[in-house]
Image (tube, rainbow, N blue to C red; front, side, top):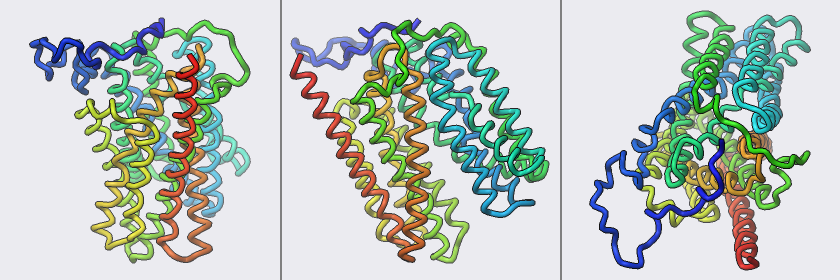
Length: 425
């Protein structure tokens, strides 16, 4: 059963002592120390490493499927149709994640995961069969619609598996290693296509997703978890006003990330080295991975971090990209731009967990993923249109800091609302 709300209190280890410094002689680097919040301490808790690894395995298609669909479609279809299939898959994922998470909130995770992966596998198979264009587009939607909601299912487990003071570390660790999905996904696709042919990428995506589902859904913690019994509302977690503000901020953060994907591609083409685009995006993902690991390592910094501050730092990290220097320097700047993303997402997820009405935590996390994905798609579209209109690469990098600054403003509104709510108690 979910841990009661008293776990949300600040743990004793994080409170200053009125009697002076603590006298506990326990080694602070010891992962068995009940006050330790390192990544090792989190991973050594029974079942944590398994659910994290299984969810990452099952989420590889999120990084692999878009490229797999493009490679498959370009064999016999136009670039427009190829883009349509990627858009259909993405739209299916955006709609399916909150719906599946709501089902998991109301019932149990394993049946929802089994149903989802069956539907998604059928979608990938129908896409590969390429009966005709309408069926193929529908199949791509089905493949995305049925993508198992690993992110939301994993994140509601943390309060069951971990003491309260380690939950935030778990969020950060998950966000950091999640970057591996977007590094390994394209590699898996290209390797499978090289071995099997154009349909290999689709087959690999389906197989990784199925393997991750089996490993995740058979874990004791997943099988035992039950959603909270609570009054249901058609709007689910979206009825909470402050939660909607967090989602709006995540939408704009996603727009910043998505716009840079297109801008980096245009930059690489203008530099006469289109292959640099992949390296630039990999550098940004690596920066995010490093940022997440640093946040885990120096967990004490989290007590000073708020969502407005984190988003402000995130915005500043994108400003150097406007210089558009030579590719080797740009590689470093792209890595720097990714450093603050894990901090933003960690704080946002903690806020969502706190703000979600009873019985809607999984759906709240799914809406976060949908908001980020929708923002990313919108940012990419806006950057493409702006680049086409202006014909200047630097303009493409403007959207990211502006969008991030807007997200900072929304985060400040949420923080002021929280302060007013606290003062009124």
